[in-house]
Picture 1 (cartoon, rainbow, N blue to C red):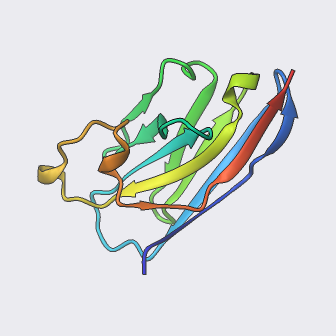
Picture 2 (picture 1 turned 120 degrees about the vertical axis):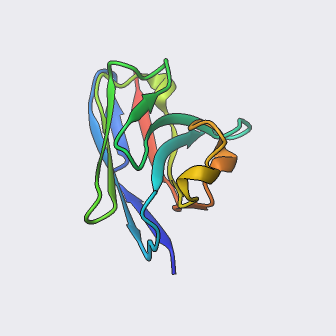
Length: 128
């Protein structure tokens, strides 16, 4: 059974750093894309960063130069290193996975509908 578990959230001050982890178990496909999204109450889930099955990465403009995404394919572990955090980064952060075969991947990386399974989320709070 496919399962994703995020960890690493917490409370930091402006300019601080956090490292989020997501461990996926029960993965059965090879061409797996993974991504981090975040959501604040009342807003849609926002794509932050992704790494596809080829290892290519994408970032939202709001986090470029501050956040870094990486993955360990052997363990299907997804990491998000977040530096220079700002209060506007405060949100619940979710890890998503897309196991669709490559030839069927049609949605952009930052479309939440692309990902068919999500973790429970980890809260990040940044104070000024």
